Length: 406
Image 1: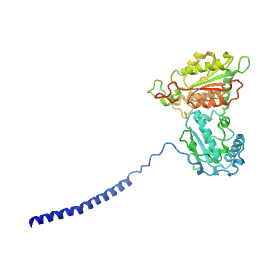
Image 2: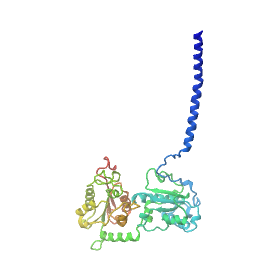
Image 3: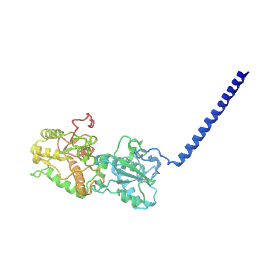
Image 4: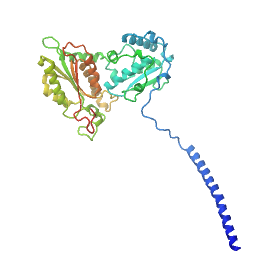
């Protein structure tokens, strides 16, 4: 009997634990939840990390400024490029110079974030988006716009923002940054409804990218040296654009490379200028009869490369004096260099506009600065029986580690 009593007490004790343990677990869970909620409310809320790339809003989120049937007063689908451009300019000026501050007309702001070649490409795409969706177009590109002739409409952002009483964060303003890349909103955008209003890149190049009066004066002076033969007859010249990446090391110096040029900015390897020299000599001997008359205009971001060219070509070579900086540099790192850097930036654009007049061109592969000038060489009306001729030279080490791919 005693054993039975002991067994009963043990069984009762175990049954109590079976009841108590779940209750304790439940109580602990509730207490943990209360503590979590309390301390969460006391701690600052951490927002999810946002992408560094600001997506432009979809074009359909803005109200169009004109009737679907006849945008800008144009009717039909057969309007010329000039008709479309003039109609847009007239509409743009009327809105901006009128009661723009009280208008609901949407605005497209182009903001340059790259060099000249990359930015012109993005500029044309942004302007086309504005034309095709009924937006006022403005550009925030001061370092370059100062070297360009004003188009027939107000396009400077500072003036446009004041006239229309808007800023970058205003609901009616859509910001489009350049340069273009595969994930860029304008690349991802499906065709616009008014696709027939698209203006060709070559057309916009001639309308929006023209030299200011001071730049044109220097361009004309340089062209006289290149094109005017002592006899008075015009002569051809070859353009060499040799971009090494040296201009980028001013703001992105890399102590881990031999010359300070960061790997991502390298376009050519040391010594690659010899390929440009060989190609220039080949063009002279095969395309032009009077070899001694042909001049060579060279632009490069490397003083060392220009010295090599001077030793090779002597008086045949024409270059512009001055320092070179990357045209994407919006702020000057060293205030003491401000005047020198401004002159260097001015030289960048004089170089480019002179290069556009070349009869033949040898440019650096992957450099949109050279490619954008070569577009004009390709389109230029040449009297030369051979016509325009453009050659691209790639990095001799391309495809190897730390070099751009071919």
